[in-house]
Length: 537
Image 1: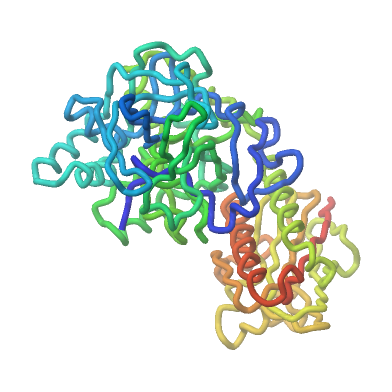
Image 2: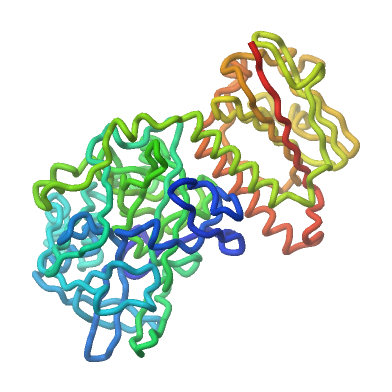
């Protein structure tokens, strides 16, 4: 089992993401690249949107080879921010010499350098390369690292121990000559961090692996036009979207694996429950960013560790920048920060609405052959007065299991079907619809425990997403309890970012499996419909 995302392998973009890769989004509209809208499915990223990003590499001028082993960002003209585990051994042994495995798992060595100003490593020039003057690793990290070494652990084992047990996986690399390009905007105050709930749309970037199966193998070999050979997970910068995950949930999950793991206030967790979206080995030190009210990126974390890469149920763990702000400024001086008011004043409803629009657009594209097979309506019309009762009428030309999701005017996401009442075997058929079938939601016979939904605030336009899915489709979401079904629309809303990213990821993965089997692109057993409705005073 490999824990760390360090020193050899970089970004994972997802199990089914590569065939659906999308270009990097603009800062003005992070949900769309202007041609396609996707919330799941990463792809090539441009330096234009990540101007401060860079890599750590070991370079050997004698053999004209180099290996890019970790990520990071410039935070000041002479300071590069990265993960402690990337450079702990260098700092402890007071050396810039280091080694890495090439594409044949042969050890290659070189001198540590920083590369900045490139989103394509095949175009690295002398102007892009910065020699290292000094390495500063967080003292608590080094304490755990040195204790592990004193116990006889090998350097890589000691690094693993310090990364998972210290909670202070952060380091600074001082450059011998100044970087004149952009520097990262950092979250230096706790109030600038996104909060959970309702979750947040985050993005991580690096030069790494696009297949988690490759994460325990060697780097890829590339050749530049000047004949230099370099090794990396990817020659081009990649980025991926990941939703924020509650630290308490993440900690509980990882303590099942390792009771000694430290996951607390100094860290952030992000990832998709179904897997397929993650950072990976070698992305370490790279940026995890959020967006302020003007949709500009600011860095809230850096890639630290996690179980494997993009595995279902296991999230990526990131060092929280704001928790180490005083440590950073005491060593690197005044830094460019994200103003707290700007970050906190973001319009949550607008952001959730954009996210929902992007999710529905991606589903519409993925499920285009299945559109028109089902229809959904509200008896009496799609305009419902506050406090009035209503239900949904669903008809289908295809047999399968139902998934019904409500997105209200504030962007809150609520899974209506399946729900807690349908958990038992005796009621499981309530979540099914037959060919030429007809259902009301909630059930007209009162078997759900209440006869209709009540139109509650917020007033405004909402959407109902209805899917018919094959029996093999695994919907990995948390439904509300029967008690919670009696409130508002009967269900507790889910964090929009986490829920929608998980749902789209599951659909994308299931469709990839469907297309490789019988039926091809006709998508038998699938149906898709969206109902626009409005709650009015």
